Length: 500
Image (tube, rainbow, N blue to C red):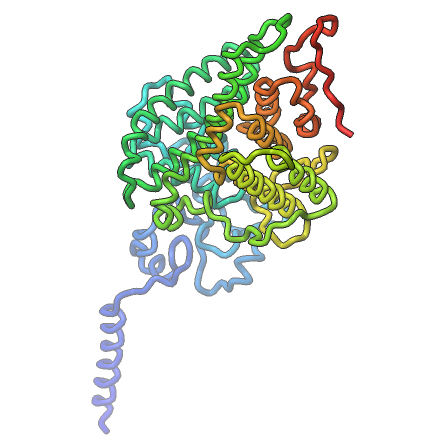
């Protein structure tokens, strides 16, 4: 081959190589902050075009340097007063320096334009407002009650997490769709806040506010009872439940206030006082039974909703029996009460069947409660509350809902007997007060057991006090010291037999 041909081929191949080199797009080699390829050709690095310079390291790294070299050698002099490494696995360090947080490592003299973008800080006070859609519709004087309900009151209405969630998160959703519920929420929050106040004036204002709100709620609640449907069943049940809670708390307060108004030198409470305290007891029973008005037609809808944890107890023992020696002794005491209306020589009366049925339900409620106080039975522990099962030490009750079984199951006729001050019916109420009095650390049940006991004592004649001496002792009531009575010097004084 001629020499000139070889020269031409060599020149052509060289030119082709050069053309390909300049026609092929340069690729960034990924070195921070300016790649070697771009720096060598004095080009704008594509890496810098994609990311802000304030987020990049200012240490130039050549492709010949290995990762190991970059970690062991001291970095070059930076172009800016500080370094922020955000794309490296670990920041470069020197033996005399300690790595700092990439966000917090700023000099005190750096100006806002020289510093990096600050991260968003979410403070605890910045949270999702579940009442946002309802808050603006209320006057400012009531809006604080919504906050108190959410962060405090709702958590006291249940002990297990699913029920707490229903009270805290699902109730606001129901309120938005059923406006009358907002009055129930405000009423319960007012009562709870009033129970926390020490100042009497503040307590009184909260009570007035609670009464006003519950009256508005009931005004809108009652007409809706005529048409319980899938759309309103859960809202009506929530309203009925909060109304019952209202009566639990206010009944104890009303009985205490009413008895405090009786003059100290009175021989016995006036009849209007007795009627008033009995109405307070009846309101507790009607409040609980109000939930049945909704549950009976709307059971499927309510148990299929987020309110299900409030009303379903599939784990309760189906076979009820007194658990333990103490429970068996109490059951024997209850069983003997039937002799008050069924005994030799006693003529049968129509209300005896109602009394016997109510006594059966009372024994069943005592038995269930005793079963739920036995430790290690495998029952869920999410509903546990403090409970004095032996009247001396405080134990645990696995579900306080068990104590509400009796008022829900008794008949309307039984409630009428209580209103009529029937002796046997009042005695059963006094024994039921034991269960309420044993519950501890529940603000809306605080004092209800002892208040109910004193109301019964006022309605009974002093000759019949011996029938309630045991329940009075259990709840810690001294009848002679708590109820107005005749002076010992007066004739006609009745001696109350002490329990054996």
